[in-house]
Image (cartoon, rainbow, N blue to C red):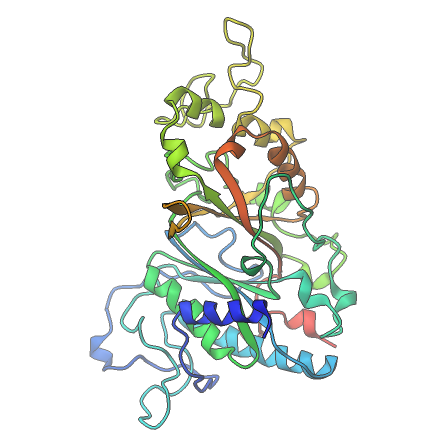
Length: 416
């Protein structure tokens, strides 16, 4: 048995995978009578549409992320058929869960496992979104899809200072489930893993708490585990989304029109070392005041930073290695990305006794080569923040456009 699939089985156990259940295409009510259902309208995000939900959607508070490897071993045509059936089943389940319904199937038959694992029965969707992406490895010889691999889905290069765990990186398919209720997000990932058993195994997963970005101007800027406001200058408006986030008509692969490319990076923070650093040093690392979020050049959080400003001694007010200076669009030819980051904690690092915690960085863009890769090359080489962080996990995924009422994820990709 390879380490890859041993890790995958651990991932399945971590999310509490149950036995395989039936996957009928219809929907049904949860266990209990209609009188038990809440009367108020639930917080719900539409599942269908030209673009997938969970990208430009106002960011929810909780994340459950998982990447899967396919275990098919037939001919390319047979493997595509298996993938097609998986995606049909997953789409029906995700649609139902986003509507606050159980996974399609039978839940009251005593002689078979329930179709839905049940931990979210009675829960509202809490703005659940389920977003899918396809990794570069999906386009190898197994499925005969090499000709449909977008040029923008080029493997990420190695960056300075990273220490990636191969068992917590990559994957054929990624699922991002976001909700304001952690149980609802977990439920989505758990049930897709269960429904896919026999066709996919989980490669790696991550739970996120406390959003570390805002994707709506109506949301207050949250803080990361270093205590700083994170993502103050994130993309909020539709026009900028169209320019920098969503794939347009110029794509080399029509199936990616209205889609986006997701980069996932697990970034471990050296919290104990950070907590011993002076406030002035912390602020110089980020280029912002810790408590107000304002740039070091003054004003309030959303004031434009003055990168030309100097201290009395002639040094830049915002230091040359400040994270803010290096990442700013003014200093990168206008390039922007859409952040959807979350804080995470995975307990303790046994070898050191330190907290195993950090930032699960998710970002969307229309071309990672000229956006994430260009920015990260610069940051990995010069960012003062590198003293306190290490990139330990990574993944790149092509997230296709949305689905209509009778469509399934990846339908245009798999069209003959």
